[in-house]
Image (cartoon, rainbow over all chains, first blue to last red):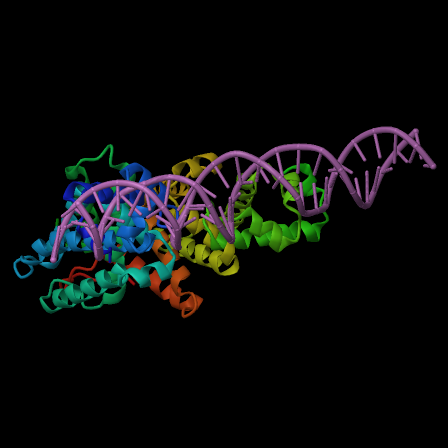
Length: 214
Length: 214
DNA sequence: CCATCATATGACCACCTGGTCATATTACTG
DNA sequence: CAGTAATATGACCAGGTGGTCATATGATGG
């Protein structure tokens, strides 16, 4: 947690530092992010940085936590409709919420995506619980409920499909990150719909009597 | 390309340097890998390193290229059976070959997986063409052939499903990397089979008349 | 035995890193 | 106004980075 000195700062100065730091962590991994660049670009002295934060990790952790809370706000709105949507609609809305978060908070999103790819497990453990596990557990519950409702094939391995759904989300996010110049929100949602269709119906050729749900 | 000096080295010294370098790049990203550590651990002088290689990138590129060739050998064996297997069997064998490569060349595999996650696009462009694109194009051709054969639903977007298959391969690889202590080859192949089943048949509840292929 | 050429070496360079600390400045309070 | 407490500052530190270079050593051939 940043020191009280940081929170006593005038709001504009505080926000400036945060904004610069978020940019730095969006462009560089935690290890490669530079405290020197942050203090230079936010116009404070090196010493001041360490009056505000214990160390580099303190600042990073703070930003990650704030970002996580913000993302949960986006996902929370979807979960209000939890009972009214079937499994596939719900997954669709969850992906949509994730994309909305990414669109509206591109730097925070980039930081999160970068952290997900970082294989320094210690970094995760010191900062927060691995969100991939969180996401997988959530999808497992969703799948079980879908099976109870008769929406999902009871023969599948829920753990594995949950993993697949987490990974698909990650893949969509990477796609967004790499191609964000070309694609607007609609284009991405079409991809999401197509992916969900595949997960729902499979890709094998259908016999005449079988019908696939769009 | 390394300088002739490197190739003139006695084989054991040359291999020692390569082995140490491979370890270094498996444990650290390109940027974080240390020439100092490599020279120290392989018992050569700093200056000698630069008699053998133009710079750090020269060595890295060399290792990446060698690793790519080796992986292609594994995949090539599968492609000999290209005509005798249906689409899903072929994908299964391709994944199996990738896992075999990872099992037998864990360091090279780790380097490749790390490079895939690295978002320094310049690094890719200077070193090689992005293997994700290669893989996707290949799956596109495979899917088209599958559609012609009547194995694949012609209504799908081949580009998107190809992307999904590439990402599934990546996900399986990450899983292997993170959990390799616990899982043996059989365990991983069970996961592969389950994933292919999902892609093939979908996860929605099946009506009585429909049957899913294992 | 000497001359030439390839190779081996580590001190050295400029630059960067995260972090510290004595000192200067400012703000608050009696 | 004085005195104290909070904050701001940048020089400085040890240790790291990739890369260079003059020099030393070794081998090869006439």
